[in-house]
Length: 407
Image (cartoon, rainbow, N blue to C red; front, side, top):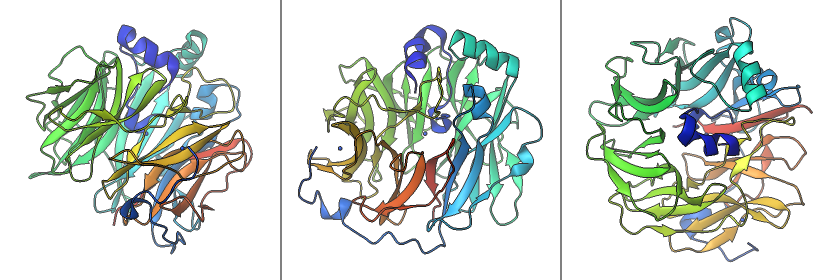
């Protein structure tokens, strides 16, 4: 999330869901933990899809670049790239973003946005979002076999801006998303057919963000006014995780549901931390060493600042991937739950790594890197070795926000 928006959120309650943000390491050490960073050949077999977003980066304004965004997929070996759901681009100033997969991998999650250019002009001039007018953003499910599209957030619509669609396990399973209502962000759940939308924040005035569900679907975590809460799946019994820090952001459940990981500290000086869901055992895992946690998206000035580059869990659940500043580069790192740190990449000055995503099979990672001068996506071993590019966007374009297809 960008500096301007973070500093103004509490005053204006204006923002967008982190999950579909337009924008989602210290010297070599010995192997961290065998189950977390073991070297496995990354050679893609050409059968697994990776969803991502392509867009222009060098047009004169943020809005001009944003409306070129298109949801795409590519095989894990870099072949068979194609755009998804081009039929959603029905009028000017419309764009799509790839936002995730269903648990079975049969459906892609696609965000589709439109913004009135006059509102975009106001935002550019005032260097801030105005999301109470001139916007429409909805979340779709795209069936990979049939190509059928379903707009899940227009059913019993609660807002003109709806993002961050997630699948919530349970009996019955649910869908979650985040809606902006009068400029205030609210986490919602709904039935799998898009009906019976329920506001988990109970209509409070706090800005709720970073909504995620526990692996068993019984609890949710989110941050509200930069404080981390864990609540029952229906939003009842919210529990504050006390950190003593003013800024706490983007909670994520560990694969076994025993920990909640988030960044904590100050704006632009926050670091990967963990706590138990009941609020106990809070601790800092590592330091990002001066990295602000934001990856720029465009090559021209953007008042939004960039895309939040938050840590993610290794799927083994015993360690966390993150990005830190090392010299004049931004490197991929891995830290175990007991604080052992490993630097995974060793780059030339100015290279930026970001947005790491482990593969569901626990054998590879995808990440973004500017190692060739552009924002490209790569696939590598768990230790980031033997990386190969899976995108090849030209100068003036970017590819970001990789999402592995689930088995």
